[in-house]
Image 1: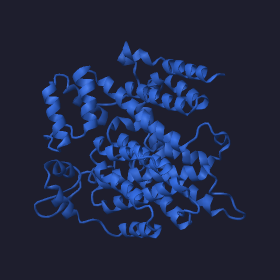
Image 2: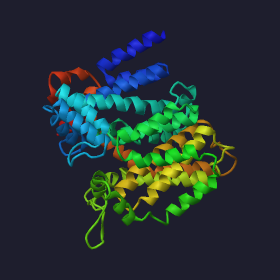
Image 3: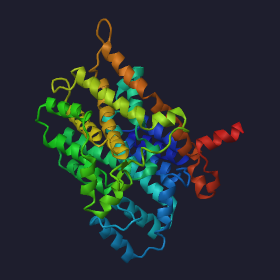
Image 4: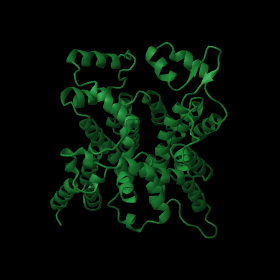
Amino acid sequence: MYPKQNKGYALVFLMVSPILGLVYGLRNLDRKGKHLVLILFGLFYGLLLTYSEGNDAGAYASLVKSYYYLGWDTFVDRLIGILTQTSEYGLPIDLYIHILCGIAGSIFSSTSLLFALVGTVYGYFYGSALLKVIDFSNSKLKKISFLTFMLILLFVIHRSFDSMQTIRSWTGMWILFNGVFGYFKTKNKKYLLLIIISPFFHLMYGFIAIPAILAIAFKSLPKFLFIGIYAISFIFNVNSLAVVDAASDNDLAKRKLGGYYRVDKDGGTIDPIAMRDDSNKVWYAKYGKTTSVYTGATFFIIFLILGGYYSKKIMNNVEYGLMTTALLMATLANFLSFAFALYSRTMANASVYILALMVLLVLRGVFKKRPGINYETIGIWIGIIIFIPKIVYFSSDILYKTSMLLFVFPFINLFDTNLNLSIRDMINLFIN
């Protein structure tokens, strides 16, 4: 079948069944076609996203409505406030969400359009990352082992389409990842631009991007220096009082840090995120959202170091760069562990680099079977087992956020939004 015909069929399938179109496109199109399919699937996923008023998506839907009657002068004033970091309390502090709300709210007065735009952008960068790491056209993928499949699965689900409803955090993560991966692969300076602009999607990338920049700027430094600093980071934290004091010089930074960590008048520390009561959560929600991911990522980092794989003789330039970036990000996360939110978001970024690296190494056949007991395979399986709560959590979360209309007739939502039920809602209808 001709490439144009394949693309035509994929687009038709996307209109009728986005999931069918996604599967067909990944199986039959070239790289550009696959990327287009992932972008369009992101658009449909965002357009049909199911959410409640209490989660991130619900909060952003309310924010869009506040833009319905926003004048141009006010829009520009808010824009200037974001760029100068002088935004008033309760207003957006990131350029990305401000522009999206301006388009979806001020121009079109549509909350649905917001998530369609978010899904499209997310699909672009998430899809680009998947295609950089996984060559879906490679015939070897049809013959991969179960172990290889599991590593690919972990990379794919780490922050998949279900995570786009947070809008800023993980869109920024995939932008930064594409910049880092692209630069180590091509040395093209345009990828440095992606690294630089990541803070415009979420302010936290102003510090999360630092390890990526260091990995690029000091790539010639000996690996033992990075490993040594990483080891030290398990023992020491940065001076949290100094961080709080430095943040107090800027009202915006003080407000943001105050939501994650603060010091009371008696000198005691308060971590509102870590203080949340998780005792009523089911086991996979309690451990699968963060704990198993960060523990598993740490295990893989140590596994590669102790196994002697962190070497320019074994890793190619891209793999070595990803390893160094993961190591430095995990180091920063450990140093920031005095505030769980800072640790968690930084470690989530470190995890995507180490998972991508594991996929690249296993697809390249670095972990070859040897006679006798294969300790490498045993080690990798231990890491995968640590991630099991994450797999279960993802399976539950995706059922809640994914619309049944992604399977068939997505445009029905334009005529009757009551038919836009999540997969879990549909299952409950049949059970009850």
